[in-house]
Image 1 (cartoon, one colour):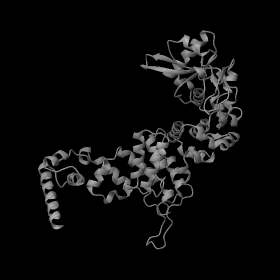
Image 2 (cartoon, one colour; image 1 turned 30 degrees about the vertical axis):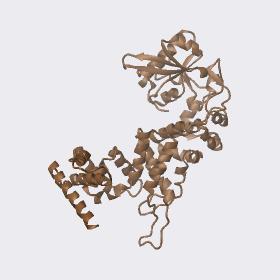
Image 3 (cartoon, one colour; image 1 turned 90 degrees about the vertical axis):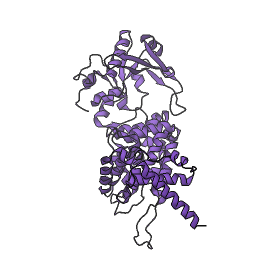
Image 4 (cartoon, one colour; image 1 turned 180 degrees about the vertical axis):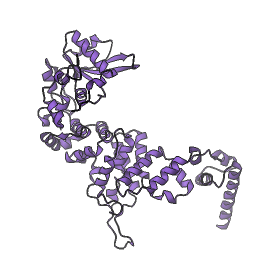
Length: 475
C-alpha cells in the first residue's frame, strides 16, 4: 500500500462532509463509519472521488438528523445527505446506508428485499470485493493510526497489500446477485494493476454470458471508465480472458487473428495493434478519443482480403475499411446508448482516420476542409496513436499538425465571399448545380486564387458562361 498520508485529503469538502455525518450520528448513539471505495483509496493514498457512510441508524433516523436529505434509496436503506461547505462554495452529497443484509437478486442487479443488520460484520458480507468491504472509523484519525482504525472482517487489507481483487464469500453468488460486478472486477484490477483471484476469475468465466442481463447504459459506463482510467490495454486483456468481451463487444473479438501487411504493421494482427493504441491512452483521456482508438479498425475483419497473386503488388488489403468501420461503430454506439454528439464524433474519427495518408497530396482547399472536422486536434491525436502503434512513420502527422497549427482559423474557415443568397439574387434556383457552384467558388477562395467579393462574382460569371457553353455544345 502507498505510504502517502490519508490526511493529505482531510481538508477536502467530501472528507469533511462525511466526517461531520459520522460525528453527528455517533453523537446520537449510532454506529457510523466510512465505507467502501473511499476506505480502499485512503489506504492506497489516493484521494477518493466521493465518500460513503455506513451506519446502524435506520433511514428514518438519518432523515431526522440532517437539514437537507434525499430518500433516493429508502427501500435499500440509502439516504443522500447534503452538507454545505462555505469554504469550497459548494454543497457536498454523501450517501449514507444503513447496515443491512440482502435477499435474493432475481433481476441480477438489486436485491428483491433487504433487512437491516445489527452489526457492521453482517453488512460487509453483502458487498462485492474484499478491497471494497472495509470500514473506517475517522474519529481521531491520523496518518499514523489509520491501519488500527480500519474494521476489516473480510481480509481486505491483506488483499490490498497483495494486489488482489477477490469476491467476498462465494464469488458465484456475488456475480449472480449483480452481473455488473464482473465488469467492476476487471476495472478495479486494471486501474490498480491488481490480479483477479483465480476462483473469482473462474466464476466470471462461468457467468460471462449473463452480462447480457445488464443494461447497455451500465455496460457503456463501465467500459468507458476502463478506457479512460489509464490502463485500457490491461482492462481489455482481462475482458478477453474473462470471456466477457465476446458478449459485450463481439466486433472487437473479431479482430483477433486478422493478419495485417507486415510492412505497415510489424506489430502483428489487428487485435495486437488495437491493444497497443489502448496502452498509449493516458489517464483522463477524452472518452471520444478512447472509443475511437478501440474502434478505428473495427472494419478490418469484414474487409480482409488475402494477397492476390494477380496484383502487381500483392499484399493483404482492407479496402474501404474506414467506411465500413464507421457504419459498424455507429451501430455499436447506438446499441450502447451513446449520446448523439459523442456518437457523431467517434464515427467521424473512425471514418477519417485513413485520410492522413494523403495530406501531402491534398489541394489547399481539400486540406483546409479537412481541418474543419469537429475537434481536428482529436483527429490528430488518433492518427498519432495509430502510427506509433504500427510503422511509427510520423511524417504525415507532423505535416498536418504543422499546417493546422500555423494557419489561423480565418484561413481555413474564412467568411464566404458569396453565399446562397447571392446566387438566388443572380436568378439561380437551389439544386445540385447550385451547391456545386458555391463549392467551386469556396475552393477558389481557399486556394487563394480569389480574395475579394468582386473576384468571386467574376468567377461565378465565368462558371455560368462555361455551363451555358457546355449546354449548347451538348445539344
